[in-house]
Length: 128
Image (cartoon, rainbow, N blue to C red; front, top):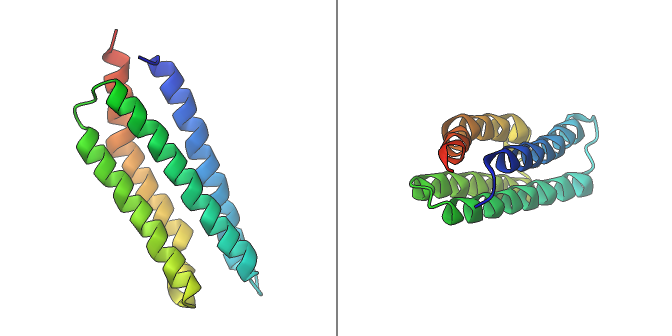
């Protein structure tokens, strides 16, 4: 089983990657004349970063026989769906909805980290 400190370090780096993409997305959307192509690319990158992180974390949970895998995975699915909803809103031109993409997703991710990722880190720290 991977060491807990490796999970914490990798997890932190992956969260920072998503946060960097999200901050870039928010900056793009705040421009006077937002570049729709760059926004679409950032949305795709945010989704890819999240899905990569979720896959990594779920594999680790499965390997460690994490008892809350189902609930943690359900939270991942919710976040991935939220990103997909925002991508659909953006593609269809519902700008009022897409202007709040990053603040909403950041709040959702922060809540996920507090509720699920911190519990996972604690679980892994108790494993021999």
